[in-house]
Length: 307
Image (cartoon, rainbow, N blue to C red; front, side):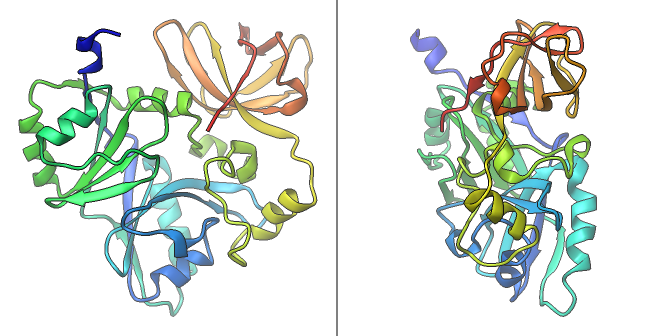
């Protein structure tokens, strides 16, 4: 790869597709520990985490990224289309707990590409090297995301991010669809309104991303998740598929050959220049099939995600 390509980086406006909530108060850890699937005791300023919020029957209502925003505050990044409903649902269970859940005062900016580390250094910011590692400097929290392509989210007040945009004035600007493609290729679990309450966390590989704690104790949906882990046989996993034409909508059924019964479901998809890439929750028994299709469009033989 040429030095020019290696030095490229781009900025992504995440606001259209991603929202940031802040849960803050003396009881924030105890409350979220009883609601979400990961272990809040392991959430530190230097280590963010992926987690999930499930229904009592163990199906994910949201997948989210958690990060520390102070001793008594946790920021929750999740798809914008879910933010209002998840906020309302969480508030239902606050009761006498001492915390508030509201939109975060901070904004988000995506930074991606082979030159991302150099761009951060030029702005005097750290570049964490492992997925979910975080570091903060000059009022900006930098979080390394999953994927082979170097990717970071930058979280800070809007005026601070605007100052960075001036530093990186020559950078390529991309829409949130580019970030969506990165997530598909990296195998990052995403739940959208069309797929709410469809997948147990392991079906979407959250266990492989370090997004489930099996020893933290009780939380909503824990019995189903734990039973599948200790006693069950997982029958569906998330795989990477590709096809031609327009990206299928999340929730679209996947079939095998002429079979009428669906064998999978699209979790997330994005255009990739040659067609589309899709993260598909698929019956493991069909994962070597060469005759998968979504509608009339053939899908490539699924590739297992490697983490």
